Image (cartoon, rainbow, N blue to C red; front, side, top):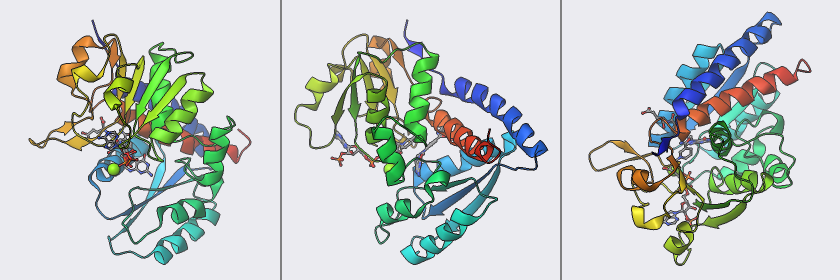
Length: 283
Ligand SMILES: NC(=O)C1=CN([C@@H]2O[C@H](COP(=O)(O)OP(=O)(O)OC[C@H]3O[C@@H](n4cnc5c(N)ncnc54)[C@H](OP(=O)(O)O)[C@@H]3O)[C@@H](O)[C@H]2O)C=CC1
Ligand SMILES: Nc1nc(=O)c2c([nH]1)NC[C@@H]1CN(c3ccc(C(=O)N[C@@H](CCC(=O)O)C(=O)O)cc3)C=[N+]21
Ligand SMILES: [Mg+2]
């Protein structure tokens, strides 16, 4: 029997705990607040924005939305970030990625005050994560670690193969796993013999953005599969990077899409914002 790893259930449990923490903060006159900057109309970003607003409101966390058209300039974004950086009412700043090509994403990320960097993408936070001294954790990889822990899937000593090396998923995922004593292989679009590597995985984590790319023949029986992908298939249905129908029967455990990693990303974002707000009172 394959275990279906339920991200919605764990996300719900975490959000219930957060509700109590926001009540305590509000009693001290602190309203935890997250500023979200969205440029353009990336599909996965829109799903993310919609769901996180709903979840934030539910736990008593304030959100401020800043929406810009695709044609926005780097200067306009930098001006806003500079203001938010010093606004005492804002505890977390998140810039939705991807950004349009005329904007240098690295420059924008580096402009965010590291102590308000809820995504953990600032170079200082990335460096501290890789030095095993994390101060801010990237939400998606952090959510995956929590899901694995909740399901008693120990990563220490295991061979974890990651497909995808983006700054927001693959790379920080590798650092977190390494910090937790896993043996990590990172693969990407230039990897030769990808299948030979994915077949060796005890735990396979896929974040490439290609609908149902990983098939039964790519994995070994008994594998644990974490599917980060968020794609629309030909029929317009939301699907992951793993062919769930093919892979699920031979896996020990697998995350579904939707209802797996996605809700955990949101729970971790809210949790980190609350933690940042608590920091101001020495909590
Ligand atoms: N559920 C959630 O919370 C989240 C979901 N997502 C979703 O996860 C997916 C990945 O997102 P993101 O990491 O931002 O994507 P990016 O597009 O930034 O990166 C994709 C990565 O996959 C690699 N890749 C692409 N095609 C292949 C291939 N055929 N074989 C091997 N590697 C390949 C690329 O390699 P190279 O570096 O060589 O180009 C790159 O490293 C998307 O569907 C996104 O929507 C993202 C973040 C959070
Ligand atoms: N700076 C930045 N940080 C991110 O973490 C980031 C980003 N930019 N850009 C876009 C991607 C994508 N992403 C998602 C998070 C949650 C769901 C989510 O809630 N998924 C639900 C979807 C449910 C539904 O609405 O159908 C689920 O999987 O169950 C989706 C996508 C975060 N990302
Ligand atoms: Mg993308």
